[in-house]
Image 1 (cartoon, rainbow, N blue to C red):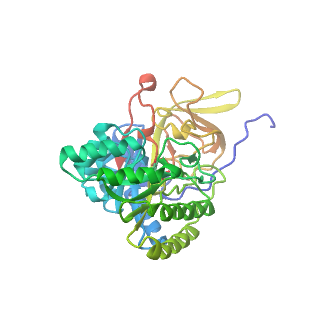
Image 2: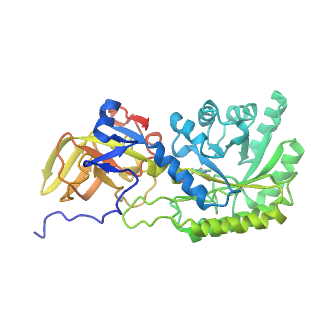
Image 3: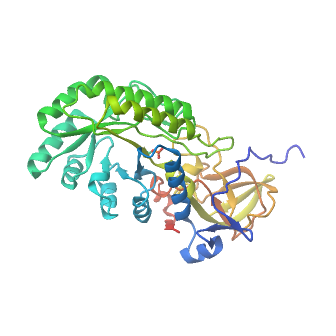
Length: 414
Ligand SMILES: *Cc1c(COP(=O)(O)O)cnc(C)c1O
């Protein structure tokens, strides 16, 4: 017995998609029927009702005055953006390509902001022409925006993205504090604001984004407070009133065994306090959160089919038609330090007992192509559907589709 494969720790049950007659249901459609409708595996499916529910829950929890933006880098599928537009107050884009998708989806330029390092001249010109808010991240961007404004005869709407002098503790990805390519160091912001004033840019406010994928409400509250304090301090140097204060977000989702859901209550209380302070300290300012994965990750699944099944020295392998080329993050290769399993299920055998220690691997000829490492799963055969949950963010658009020239995947909004 002792040398049989042992399972690694298990996840909390994934309950956001209902199960009927042993099958996962996506938008009231059985998974096998949806697969037939899509016409192929692998594919991603995003559930409208799951998207709506997550946004509603967050809105319900947070103070009404907080404006909620969707950071579309998390999932830029055009149909999904079209759906999200009706649910959130704005869209944050990180390239001219995303800007196009947002404008095509009917987002008002007034509700779009553009952040990101290495914005090209052409992208900054496009942003001015579109009339969206640019979060300035370097001195050069001030000059290019001023040129674009002159050339086009249009105002250049601008906020300053601050690289703070603190970190968001415990973040999956740190994007502020210390030397960073993102934003302008706090120390340099007064000089940058003076440049903006001289250049005639339309100053609208500040943006901070210290980190992502955080499950610690206390750390998020702390970062919110420090961000607010910085903005108040820097507002004294600004050429105009602060009308927008984008405090970032960084709200994480549970991906791995042992992850606990983020508590929203402390964050809501903290935002309530900041809104109170803002009444006197930044009276013109609207407070914004920009949130990617928290809104979409749990609304998405990645669906693959078992093409082969074999044992190697007692270890059962399900070999599937999808993997790291479509879903780099689920294989642990998108920024994770230690590989851990995403939640995985056999989508057409949801009621079967988990009885076999199983590894699920993809078709790419590398030991990195692992969707599940020694998970306890129901017995599965060739033809069964392996589902990876928590796949609505940083999936298709964050994966190397050309790797090994396997067929591409499809994405559907259901
Ligand atoms: C990536 C990014 C986001 C979204 O991060 P999530 O972890 O998906 O919420 C928001 N804002 C900026 C500036 C980003 O770079």
